[in-house]
Image 1 (spheres, rainbow, N blue to C red):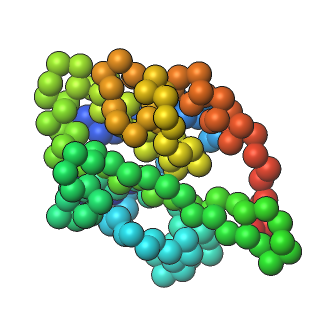
Image 2 (image 1 turned 90 degrees about the horizontal axis):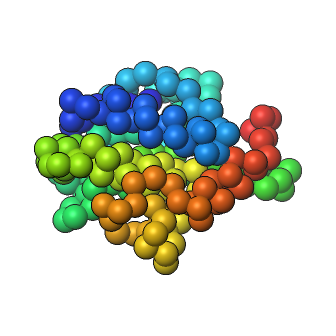
Image 3 (image 1 turned 90 degrees about the vertical axis):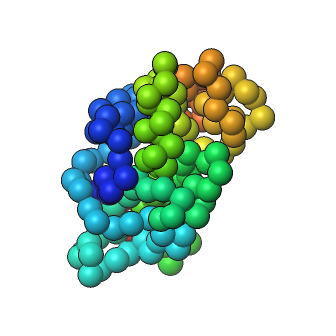
Length: 175
């Protein structure tokens, strides 16, 4: 689900190309569930039966700003992560949902600069990496390095290795 409240005009294409790239690298398939009014939340519940009856809350990609999400203060252009649960049978933890929050005004300003589309896509790829389970790394040549670089515009070797491993994880359809 996407909340486009503060999205730049190019947001749909930016998200589509970034998600296509994530799908390609991980083998995972993300489903476009459409638009939502659900806003970002620091304690987003994975099960919201009033909003999403009979299922886990879908992944939320929310365009926001520092007033709507305090984590976007300063130079932070986005953040992302996932929520996992462990079944009562003691199985491994399974991701059931997640959230990516992008600073619409900051990325809009970035898009107005030369090379801005590539830089904005890099921010989205980074946050999608967090969504599927990657953490920050110490190597500035990887997209999962905590600070963006104009020289790093796509998942690098280390990023792709981690994403491929995450994509091969077991599925627990009974959860």
